[in-house]
Length: 94
Image 1 (tube, one colour):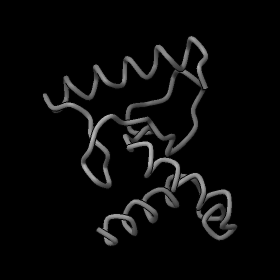
Image 2 (cartoon, one colour; image 1 turned 60 degrees about the vertical axis):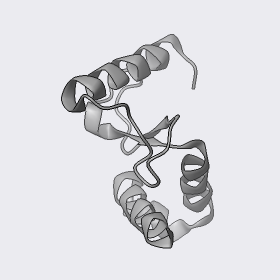
Image 3 (cartoon, helix red, strand yellow; image 1 turned 45 degrees about the vertical axis):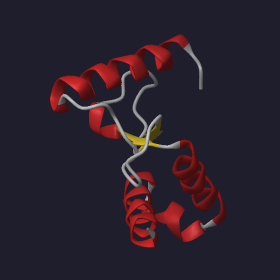
Image 4 (cartoon, helix red, strand yellow; image 1 turned 90 degrees about the horizontal axis):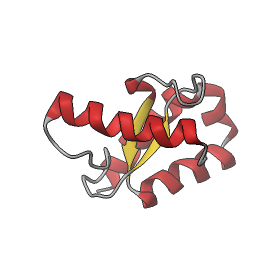
């Protein structure tokens, strides 16, 4: 997703994150940078609310998408709940 609306929203999310925390965004699983933004929920592209996006390193972001694509019971939970379950499971692996 590299639409102008998404690129602008990502920039805005990082500014909002800094304003809220005064910290750079790190992966919610492992705490490393750089991060990608994962959609917990989908709003209108480019107009997602701050809490509809969560920062993940490339490795953990890919793992969430692989699990989502391969696991029907996770899809039945919905994106937000499935993401929360997967983030918790990956944290426990550490």
